Amino acid sequence: MESGSVLILVLWISFGLVVLALYFAQSMGFELRAGDNRVAALEAEHAIDGAARYVGYVLSKYGTNGTIPDPALYSSENVPVGTDEAGAPAFWIIGRNDTSSQVLDVPKFGLVDEASKLNLNATNLTADMLAILPGMTAEFAAAIIDWRDTNSTVTTNGAEDESYARLVPPRKCKNANFETVDELRLVYQSTMTLLYGEDLNLNGVLDRNENDGDTSLPPDNRDGRLNPGLFEYVTVYSRQPNTTSTGTNRVSISNRRGLTTLLTDKISQQRATAIISALGPTNNPIRSVLEFYSRSGMSADEFSLVEAEITATSGAFVEGLVNVNTASEAVLACIPGIGVDLAPSLVAQRQSNSKRVNSVAWVKDLLSTAQIVQAGPYLTGQSYQFSADIAALGHHGRGYSRTRFVFDTTENVPKILFREDLSRLGWALGKQVRQDIRLATTLRQ
Ligand SMILES: [Ca+2]
Ligand SMILES: [Ca+2]
Ligand SMILES: [Ca+2]
Ligand SMILES: [Ca+2]
Image (tube, rainbow, N blue to C red; front, top):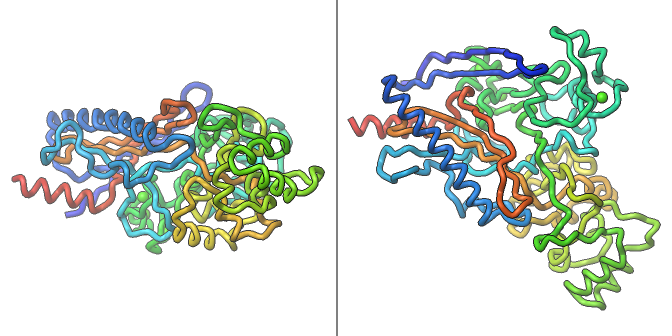
């Protein structure tokens, strides 16, 4: 029996300067006794805390030096907490599919790489890039850039103080970096449809109410495919350190002397000389690690020895690079030099290539020299921030709680940068988990 009633509460509340939050609650279709439910809800919350500690352990063991933990090495689905008896509290880590094809209502489980998304604060992010994302408008893309840039000059289609002054209540354009992705709610002409699309519970899969047209929220086009909103594609957390695994500074690709030392050390003096020579004259600057590889004439094996040791930028961190090994087709389509034409072939290539881990090298074979020059400054093969979107149930499938954490691995010990309770978005574990729990409950009775 499916629950027919979906209760959606929408409360816009403001606090502090002007912070708006949107709350949802969806009836879960379980028969719950109030007291037992409270216990189960507490168990679910404790399961989430336990899961967060587990994720910290997983990242410290399998997610060091920019590595994405292999999902085969950790548990992310129906993981029992406290005891492994049937009906114990359990958690799930809601992940994302590597492919654009989706099975209706079946989430993928695992950690999500924040570098798979566009970073709203990346200095090389443009309105034109954002506008390529599915469902975006040129106006909202430009308003995002105006919200973030430090000037008050209205860009084409954009919005600065004059536009915000007309809102009720009026507010100022921030003119500074985004601190959270949720801040997008404050940007001029922000709408539920732009931010959530059809994915009202932000789980990356097409739930029943997201494929029934206007029968229940959200409005959707009932086409059997999930059209996510902007929240699916953007982050504020991705950044990688300009230091190596041993804590020393990476070598700048414009520092020929430093490169010679590194290449001699990692490969050989003879190859170092040949590689430096292949880079060409120094008045033709190299703009990215990918372009360096393309010009160097190195083999993929040679490049793998130095890739994590070199950088194209100064400063302690590089902000907002996109990991070409995890980014969705929609995100790759926004990258200059890749675009909507080449993004599908990149996704197809990486799915058939097991040697892509931690590297951008394979991209060289799919792009022209001009495309490499354009795309290189946006791309990386390393990731240091991960979301753990944890949903949990108390005993016998009762209670439901969900919290999303963002972890940072740039220091030795993984740190939590952000946590947000998403329980208000309602059930996000899909139809199968719900059916399994009902079946287990029925068998118990
Ligand atoms: Ca501005
Ligand atoms: Ca969904
Ligand atoms: Ca709907
Ligand atoms: Ca749809």
